[in-house]
Image 1 (cartoon, each protein chain N blue to C red):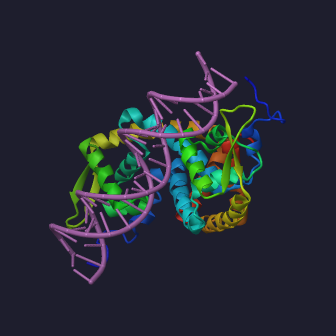
Image 2: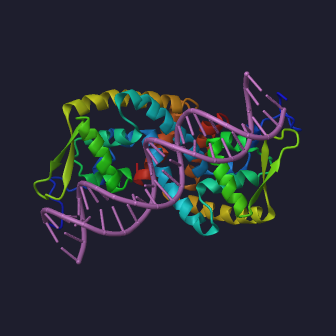
Image 3: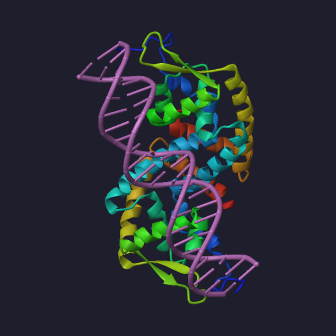
Length: 157
Length: 157
DNA sequence: TATTGTTATACTCTATAACTATA
DNA sequence: TATAGTTATAGAGTATAACAATA
């Protein structure tokens, strides 16, 4: 049989949007933004980056001299995850680890010139990715969403 | 040394909120909602559920007779992931697989009475989890967020 | 020939714990 | 004694490909 045999003419996908789960913010957000990450990864792929490594590179380019511990806390990642991400970026010549002279346990992650250029390219890609992922929302709605998320994450704005 | 040696008095975390990355919707959303998933998993833990299995159980309880294929598409998961999630729920007696008589390739995932009772409990937990995860937003802001996410996911509302 | 569920495999991500060097 | 970075390991999530039963 080529078509559905169900009594109703509407598809499961249409009917499912009324299910209780479809009104839960956590569910909706995870569904929307895991798709968003897929899109971002696709846009970043030929720059040798993924969403994760992009976020570390971005913070290394922000001229705030983060230690690996700072990055772990800010990016909500485990310090051990930062190690492999910085390893990867350093191997590609995009960042360098500089030992903090004031506390020789710490390593500040610093972007190279190549890293800054790569990040500039990558920012254009993530902008395109955001545009694709949020094509269902108007510019105004996107700004509302951005503001709500900033308040959620930074508990101010 | 006990305190920071940096020139500025503000912490890295405060200064980082102005970095370009901190204005990207995808970054903010992933940061907020992976934390949200951690919270939800913690609330669901002693019911033997996680966010993933909860979402499958939720759709099995919605009286829409989804096939595993329907679930895969709606939940944005691979059909093979649905297999193990349904395996787990069926092993715990929360759902049953019923062969669709009209297409014997398909299996409809149907909630048992035990499954429905467990889901009712679980819904209370996810409500608490949402409350904890979104404590930074007012009720009105939460509804705005919900509406924006529904539009994003269902391209209507 | 195409589709549903299934199995298998590899890779990424998440979560802990332990180790070393510095403080 | 505590902290920063590192290594190791196990478990959950992601992404593909192939196969048997059925359409």
